[in-house]
Each structure stands twice: as C-alpha cells, then as structure tokens.
Image (cartoon, rainbow, N blue to C red; front, side):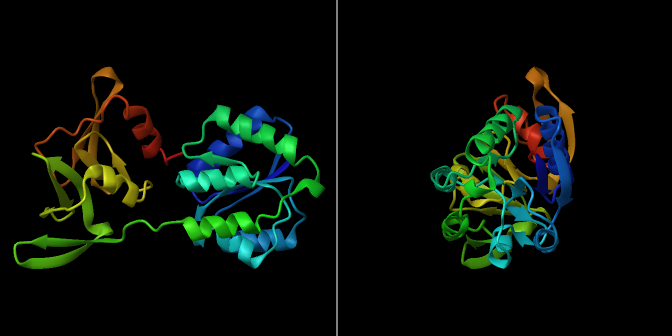
Length: 254
C-alpha cells in the first residue's frame, strides 16, 4: 500500500505515519505534504498513490482547493473536525473520515473500509459531489465579537481573546491585555463558534485560548490545573471528563 499524507501539523503527520506502520507494516509513505500548493505539485508530477490521508485545514488554505485544481485519482481518508452533517456526507459518499484526535481503533476501521471498497483503481469514487457539499456546509469560525457596554460599542478580534468565562450566570470575554467585557453568548454556544485548534473548554466555567496558558500543574484524579495570563481567581482546573481530551489538544489535537 503506497500512501500519501497531506497534513500541515508535524505531530499529526508523525502520528499518522506511526499508526499506519503499526497497522500495515508493509505500507510505504511516499511523502508528507503540508500545503495545497505542494499537494497539487506532487499529484501533478507523480503516479497516483493507493491512498491519501488528507487533513482538511492546511497551511495555505482548505484542502478542498486541491480538488478544484487537479483531479485526484486516489481514494481519500479525510481528517476532520467538521460537524455532524458533514460527517454524514462523508458516509453517504462512501469516503471514510477520521475525527481529530485520531484514535488507533478508528484508523484500523478506516483502513479496513478502504480495503473493502477501494481495493482497485476502478472503485475510486468521484469526490466532486462530496467536496461541493462540504464546502457549502462549512461554517466559518467566529472572527470578531461585537461588544456593548453602557452606551459604548466596540469590536474585538478573536486573536485578542485570552479566554471566556461565566460568573454568577453572566458570560464574559477577557482580552489578552486584561480587559473584561460582557457577552451575549453562553459557553455552550461559544463552543460551536470557536476554532477548536485554538480554544478549549476546560470546565463548565471556562473556554481558554491556548496562548493564554502560562503554566500547568498536575492535580488530583489525573486532572490539570491551568495558570492563565491574564490571571484569574476563579477555578481553572480541567474537569475530570475533559482532561484526556485536553492533553490531546495540547499535543496538537491529534
């Protein structure tokens, strides 16, 4: 099995390669590509691999752009953090997907499905309908917030946000330069609006930006205590059920 990996995060690509060699010792990784541009160039100048492992968000844009520039002649296992509708689209179109963080048992299942459905070149599906469907359903993450306080109105770019929190049933945004503003969105809603690569909900009260983490400490029951910048007097301990996912998120959301 000749496999091409398209993934711009080194920890993720190394994990995929490691999992692949554990599951399929005879598999050969032809190359690891990190961008739309390098992927198009590689696919234009090489014979089609047997299988492509492809992240959707790459260094220079969405991997959907690859399909608009060149015909992909190999089956693809997508790696995605898309919503439930998109996941269903993958299933309907018989192209397998892996959710980040990639788990070994799910990778085994994906490879088995590939072998079952795409064992010959003639079985390769037309991915155009799938790609069009996902492009149309992909909702952009929140880029800025409109803040109202008193008679004032201002916008805050998402890059300025250190964390969001709830106190006495009121939701707040804390900026990296230590300003606090009330928000109209609760944390449940914010979770659907924020890029999961950068933000993580550590407990019922906090969603934090990875850039806001100053220090971390081991805590009881395998939990993690997070020291944030700007600081807060509130509880910033990662809840027990979220701790394993938090550690995976820290390692690159694999």
